[in-house]
Amino acid sequence: MKNLHIILLISLFMFTIGCKENEEKSAEKEIPATNESSSSPELSASIEKGKGIYTNYCAACHLTSGKGIPNAFPPLDNSDWFREKREESISAVKHGLKGEIEVNGKKYNSVMLDLGLSDEEVVNVMNYIMNSWSNSIEPPVNIEEVRRVKK
Image 1 (cartoon, rainbow, N blue to C red):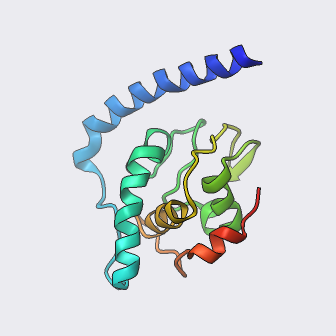
Image 2 (image 1 turned 180 degrees about the vertical axis):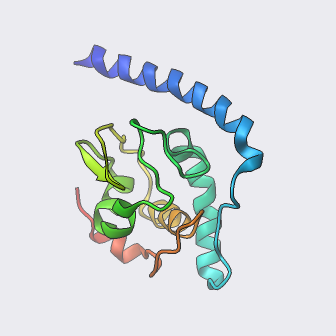
């Protein structure tokens, strides 16, 4: 089992390198990331912190465009699963996710690792995703909501 985990991590690493190269080539063509036009200063600060967290932890699989990788990692941009399953989305960011899910009519069965984010980091990255690309999901996530989500 340990060997399988090592193989999966090496595969993910190699896949990530290829994705980053392709993503860098198309980065200039992407839509501006955030939709902060009517947000409060607190929400704007949360979104800005979340952007850095997203870049460091999420973009390798879900891409900076939020479009995901077909048949491997689901999109976060205009994701019905993310929009309609708020608690499950928070749980996935907070604890990781295993098992099949359906996003925008397509099935995904990849593993999202527990990234070890603090509750505050989960709040910030959730608020970034909820206000990025074509997403405009309200209300913002708050720390109490994240703390209530248990594994």
